[in-house]
Amino acid sequence: MQALIQIAWRGKGAAFVQKYSYCHDPLWVTSQFFASKPLFLLRSKVLAHLSRFCKTKRMGIVSNPLAVIVLAAGQGTRMKSNTPKVLHPMCGRPLLGHAIVAAEESGAAKQVVVIRHQRDRVAQMVQEFAPDAVIADQDEIPGTGRAVQCGLEELAKHVDELAGTVFVTSADVPLLTGQTLRELGEAHESTKNAVTVVTTVVEDPTGYGRIIREDGAVTKIVEHRDAKEDELAVKEINAGIYAFDAAFLAEVLPTLGTDNDQGEVYLTDTISAAIRRGRRCGAFILEDEWQAQGCNDRVQLSQLRAEMNRRILEEHMRSGVTVVDPTSTWIDVDVEIAPDVTIEPGCILEGTTFIDSYCQIGPHSTLRNVEVGEGSIMPYCFAYDTQVEAGTLLPAFQQLHDRI
Image 1 (cartoon, rainbow, N blue to C red):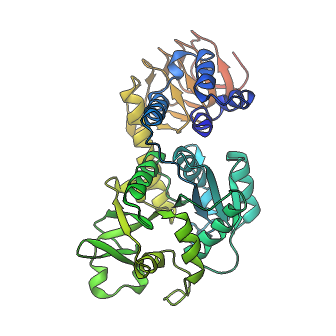
Image 2 (cartoon, helix red, strand yellow):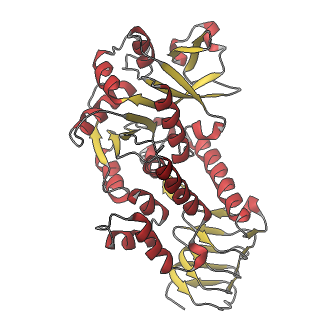
């Protein structure tokens, strides 16, 4: 729960939460933060998280997953970049940052990030973004199965027992939410599966692992390169997101081989391994296809960015913000906007920008880490790391840095 509060108030709230980190009553800490900020900061998504947590606690049905293992070891060669793929920015966070937030919001006790390519750069980002996350190094043995094994071995050093549910996700699936992981965990635990794989149905499954079923039951996952002609026709794909029984995972990973087209240890082989052991396997069908979409090149990055921005804008508009032209407006995920604010066309709002009620921003204004007081008007301006007092009428074509 403390992790939830840190997520909800990342940026301005982080120092506040740290101040009261000794307190074991997260609702009290949250109430103190609420009391210290304007009411418009009580975003509906935060209240929804708190409401859900309290309700499920009272009902005794909270899933308590052991950990989320985030795979972030790949090079991302198709990005054609000296920057690791997982560090490319999208809507105010690196791709890996979105994955870490989803992991934190899942309610798991531990977050494990498996890294290899440009290890130090990625590790620094993880430590800055999630200081409590466990960092695991993948060795020279390739494949997702080996990556998860390295993560699980490192996790074992930080917990008393490898027991419970372990999620596995990828660092390049930025639209995946903590809510989806929680629902996955509940479905996985209620059926007592050894492994539950997230699947989705797509029109073009090229490049994805196919879900093979017999009499409706998942029997194996076949990677695209290893698939036969009839298997290639299957449109239900592996989203690369899993829930495992931790003890089963620790038992089966060392037994996986590399007898496949790429000579890698496939995590997908855990499905057939479970069936051979007489264990249950299941599928969690994800209706929101975007949450399963990965980022392999800059074209896909732009598509994912556009979809996330569309969702951010829709959330603000449903919360009382007027966005005159959503097609030309870009807002980062951690920006906070009060009701009755108007965002004119061509605006870019970045970082931890806060905008109070009755403001008019734009047209064609860029704000980065800016606090804007109530009733201010800011046309055609570029402002960063500054505060704008309430009622400010800013002349057009201004650049702001110091407080006004």
